Image 1 (spheres, rainbow, N blue to C red):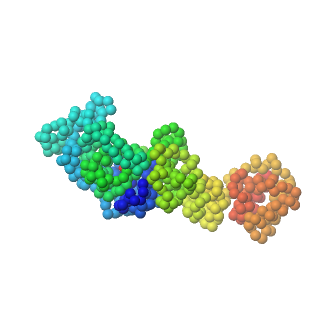
Image 2: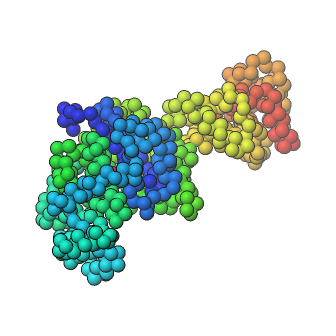
Image 3: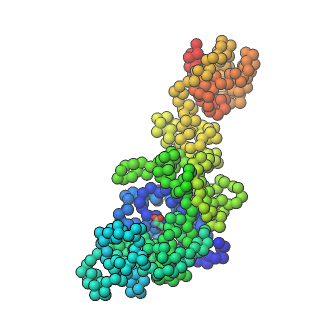
Length: 509
Ligand code: GLU
């Protein structure tokens, strides 16, 4: 798609239904909408599609906005941010839709259907794979099968009814998808979707078309699962507004499970032990908690980067992109048509890269909170910063900082004595006793000086520094891990280093 093809101000929308936590596929849809809008100097709109009251879930809308804020994908217009086309919640726009349904009825492009739930059920039992369509509508109770008087009577007597689109028989509906190119459906494959429900609420199908029109949406990126609905939307656009103003559609490929085929689901995440939601989600009814990427210790920069790479690349082999870079480099032409397999190891790799890449100040506060949760006091801000700087190369998720950094703030809980004991002897003991003295006298407490003194002392005892490093590390850290041992000693400080050496010497007696 070239820029010359765009002559109107770009306006894209993310139109979630508030039915629960936001799956990472949903966030990727937001991201692609956002990138496209920002790249073209356009607006990113969030519209809440809550016309299906039976699927409404308390807290889901707040969750959506919290996710967007976490990812840095700030809408230009939304129920929260306001805007010239308010309200942005479909339930608050209810009176706007009926006139369009009525217009379709008047023009013979929609009809009233009076079938009760029981009648529909009976038909479903009677006819295999029943669809309310050209093949069956003649058998049903609707304004096409009833006389005008009968229909009038039902309407005036207050009988419940829905309005259905009257799909033309055996007609090809063609539209251009920005990712898939030309797509053609035959209307015989599609059912007569309900447009207006018995409670006067529009269905998603009518509302999405009316609102995209009223909100002057130019491009709509949405999940591939909406592709089967597209012919109904295209026909509605044709009937109501003429196709000229119809947004350009882009149906994004699915995010697939890592093992096997099919869409990645929350259940796959639970089964394989990784998050599929952006943030923790607590089901308000069952209180079931679904873990989120944020709470697993992901940085939003990494999460966004990883999502962009699920189905898109810039063709150069570059993998790490900031949001600003993505805005500059994203191109719809490079979005793959096929589904992208989710790979949790790769997601973690992105986080690791971003932890290395970001200034420590960006996540210091988050890590501090994690330390505090474990009851570890990290009030010395300067020290915390130095520790994070030193161990960040070893961390994949934010929680790893606690594992890698706790020993700087409190004595190790366990000491791996078993790794020192077998090769321990009096010579080594003497070396450490001497080292304590040498360190007592050292004027500067800096890693490089500590190392020189350590090596000199080793030479004086005719010991190889290599044999002494492991015991020294275990004395300070408790185990065989961590960054450079002299850097550790420098940060721990003289008193703490001494106390840890002494403690372990005591254990080795
Ligand atoms: N409300 C639909 C959803 O929940 C939006 C589909 C669309 O973008 O048209 O995904």
